[in-house]
Length: 289
Image 1 (cartoon, rainbow, N blue to C red):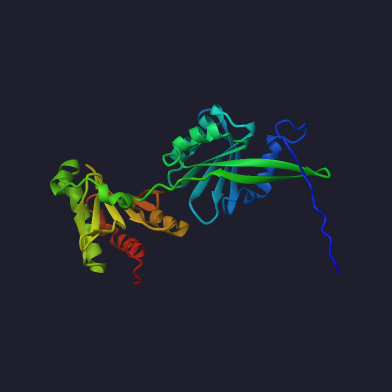
Image 2: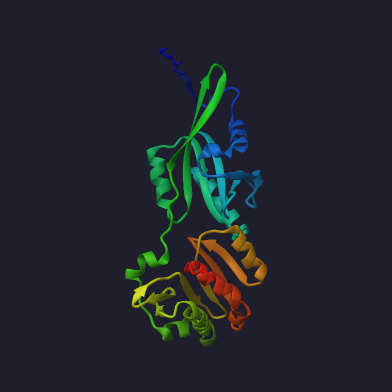
């Protein structure tokens, strides 16, 4: 038997000009079903969040399976300069207040013009930012919305992606930039690395001390000696349980940024946290105990 399907023809509507639907209504739609955004499995952490600048962040969302948060600003109608400034300002406030999380700014608007996209794209890569175009429809006095990602977040490259153009340095360069004690921290960690992967050696670059394996760079971990401590950055996937373990250990955990866990090590601490450091290195190298 031939089947007949009824074609729905919803009418596109403007939320900005609608007599009933408004920004608060759209916020409630997102709060009830964050999955509509297409940004993953998110939960709402806060709404109308008061900022130190005196403003209010429309929505703060967090990915359930990671340490990533989204600072979202909503504007009905066409987005404008004040919208992007406010969005970036709130993103900056939140990332400074909670550096243990990875943060991304999100702009939501009904109309995102090509000119405005060009302006936003100038920030992308330095400021993680997503632009979502929201379109509302009406059909038989029922409403629904669709979110389209107009501008996606640009993932910053890992430091070894640019290895071929890194400026070389030597040990004396880092002894002067740091101290003999903080450079010795790098040597101590290298000793742990050699226990699990003997072929690795240090490679001194201008902006960090990396690693090489038979002359080929593999910066699964890199170091930045300072005057009082050495920052160690370990390449690993985000894992909330691992963050919790690092924080509970007592080691100075800075943040998770661009695919790396960043921690500070002071003279004498490598031995104190040797077990944890070795575990992180083994995980980064995918070596099973």
